[in-house]
Length: 357
Image (cartoon, rainbow, N blue to C red; front, top):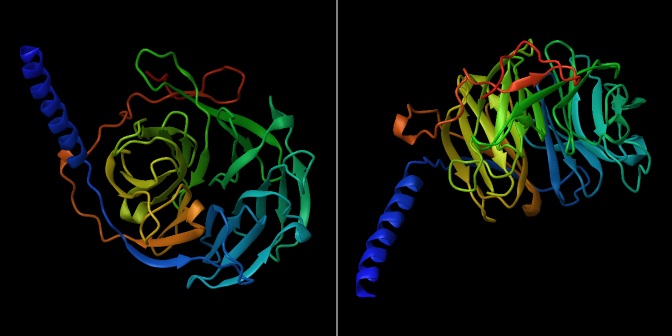
């Protein structure tokens, strides 16, 4: 018994020491909180902000407040000057994107105010409804429930859906073009499978980002939809992605940002290769802390917006200029030479990207 204890105690301290060492290897940064948005244009509390969008053409910021089913528009100094909801056709707003001409593409789900099918609703620059477009042309279109939307450099619309494998690619008129479905796996011994995509994003350089909560990874493509690299490691500890919900990028600062719903943190990755750089936040109620965050966005000034869902607010963060990071502080991600298999049109035919590992 004494002999067994003499073995257990050293082993316990060895594990504890290595656990601490692993935690120290992850760099944490505390940003400056530039603003905290808690009200809409009517002076009502900002309840359950779920989606964020920055319109680079008009320099305006959009928040979707899911509890009130409203789309709220803010000026660069965070003044809420307008909103619209069911009365204008925004029945169950989930996500949106805007083109250069001011046309707003609103992805809508189903609910009490829209008991029928999910759809894509177009609004003109005055936020007046133009038309509804129902999804068709691909398997699962009748039950497709959009969660995220982005407009690409090619003019294509990319939509991620609830528990849907890959992203749906549409023309701006709503015509189905193809599916982009990365294949991946979490553990080496697992077979490859099509990844369910949680969020889709296009940055100012036209790069396309697909985020998978299931895989704990993101996949990056160039403006021509050619695969570049993937980043992120699935897990529940520091520097890893447990349940990532939103992704954004800032090419000028060479950073990709991902927000993790379950770990209440944001993680930053290198823009050029997807390697982990630092993380920020954690669960809390004070400025700079999050309570089940759901989305993230970046504006033209490099300010980072976080939808702090259960704190009923959107926090605006400013990070200091990036310093050179020691390689010891990085967590290895999947290398670019081992990309996921791509199913381009949903038919099982492989596209131009080489198979994943």
